[in-house]
Image (tube, rainbow, N blue to C red):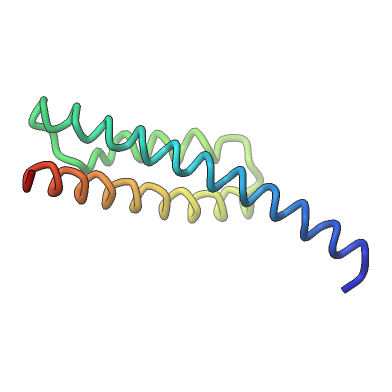
Length: 94
């Protein structure tokens, strides 16, 4: 691999590490949301909120980039829902 390619790969690795750290922080907050939803007897899925998130993160983006971001956040939101469901199930079993 060329030195320039290695430099770019190292930059991507640093960004990946930041994404991982932020995602773990997000999952922690998702558990807090799950507790609040449970106390209020609300469902895990809030499709209105999810659409608001998609709209916010894709706003003012070129179409192709917006499509990629929408796909990324659809996955993040799905994992967030699964995390909430798993967390609530584990709490119920305790």
